[in-house]
Image (cartoon, rainbow, N blue to C red; front, side, top):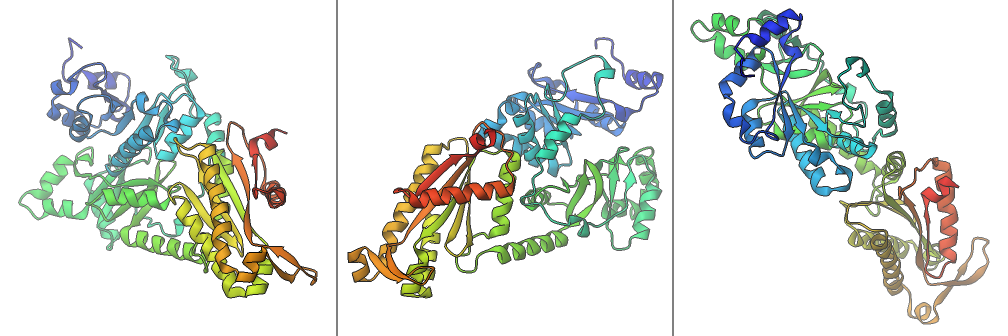
Length: 495
């Protein structure tokens, strides 16, 4: 504003009975090249000290975005629409947004995804950890405040369908430390009192009026003032009306975040010994580094118990989680159920030791044929195995189908080395069937029941129906010369 004068904003706030925290200044380079060069860092600091909020708008499209982030110390980062548009289709955009979110969370900054226009973009931003979204998918721009709703049921429905349980910490509430907090506009005496009441606590969480975390006040920070000449008086002076001057950032995560994400946020924050935990953006507790180690240890024990002792592959709990998550999220995924052909007669004829060797052979073939980053390799039990492959940007049905065919062919060839010369030359062995009658059994092979999901269809099938489909496909695969049967789950769901 050409006629702008310092103090003008506070006069407006007084006129409309508003507080400084109700106002958020947005800094952007998108429309003003070199804008930040004309903004004095001291002026920005002055406004923040007075309680105004700061946001970096259109983040990621300017030439000095990271410098602005470093100097402005914002409350919000608004990620530019360039990175959000079709983010669910782009590995690069996911990588960039994920990195921005991780840096922001480590610094205690809220992230806002701009220009979200469809459900897929919304869900991807949610999965990557963006705190808020803005765009046509939520609400079109309007100057009528009455059209802006306090909450949107359509988003609640989408989020409900998108609940992700994989990697979530069970009963995280039992680990939470319920450290009492102070509001940002509390007095320094309130901080003293909480530190006196909690002898084992060396910091106090500081929250905004809406209970969102602002950061923490460390006991060491207060001591540096108290033990200096006139320090206590200075402390009262700088905290008059607001504790912001003493607040330091602390990593913040949601209670439903997977443990891997929580650890990343904690690792980013070298200065603190834990992370603040929120639920629906509101502070509910704290996890210390020791507690995080306990959680990891417990998760590792649970995962180890679920691994098959013979092959070391994931067991039924992890497989079931993968299937349930894929169904809920309608991810583009291929699920393969492998079952040996003529395993029982082989096991009876050659003994369980050779039977175990055949099982570990197939497990090794599975491991070497696929990448663990792309998929889940599981051992259901006995001679039954599972492969779950979530499609990435450059994956195609033909590519993964070819890998499955290669697994079938390799096992059928490699397992021949376990047969005696007579069985190998004749192409069969004599063993008793399930009714106890002696009969011929051809050499062991493996069959694959393949289900494709999320290829342009909404899947609404329950677990029982899914198991029935796998059962039908297994019979078809065993009767097929290629030992494979495949179906698109979406087509069945539509029928």
